[in-house]
Amino acid sequence: MVLEDQERRLDRFRWGLIPHWAKDAKVGYRMINARAETVHERPSFRRSLQHKRCLIPADGFFEWQGFGKEKTPIHIKLKSGQIFAFAGLYDSWRSPEGESVNSCTIITTSPNDLMAPIHDRMPVILDEEAEEAWLSPHIVEPEQLLPLLRPYPPQAMKAYPVSALVNSPRYDSPACIEPAE
Image (cartoon, rainbow, N blue to C red; front, top):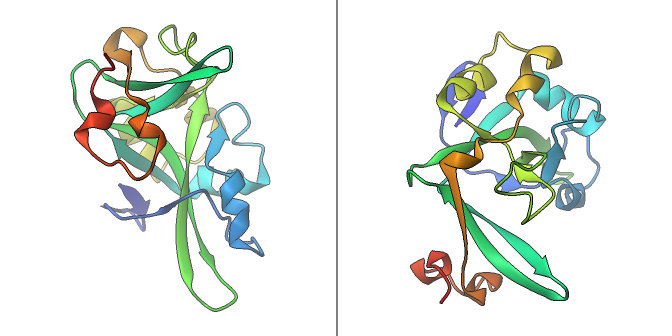
C-alpha cells in the first residue's frame, strides 16, 4: 500500500530507494534498507519519512544465520501465517532519459529475542494499529513516527531453517519455504 495524495493503492516498486535528487539509479543498490535509529537524520530518507511512507506486504522473509564459514538460510514468518507489512519509504526518480522510477526501502531495527541469534537487525513489522499511524498524512514529525519503528513481539513469530534452494533466483517454488530436513 502506498499513501499518495491521501489515496491508498497497491503498486509495484523497485527495491532500493533512489532519492528524487539522485544523479544515477545505481544509488538504489546501497539503499535497500534504512536504519530506524537514523532514518530521520539521513538526507536520503528524511523527506520520505515525512511524506512518502508505505507498507510493504509480505508473508515471510529470509535471513542467513552464520555458523563459522557456513550460512544457513532461515525463514521467518508470523506464527499465525497471516500476511503482514514492513514499514517502508518510497520516492519517485526521473532518469536522464525521462523515465519515471518508483523505488522503496525497508526500515530495519534492532532484533527481538527470536531474531538476535540469527541476525543483528530485523525489518520493522507493523501491527494493524501502527500501519494506520504509519500511513497517516497528518503525522509528519519524527517524534511521532520513530516510536512505531520497534522490534515485533518475538512470541508472535517463528523461524526455521530451509533448503539452500532459496540461495538461487532460479528456484521460485514452495520448496524454498519448507523446513529443511
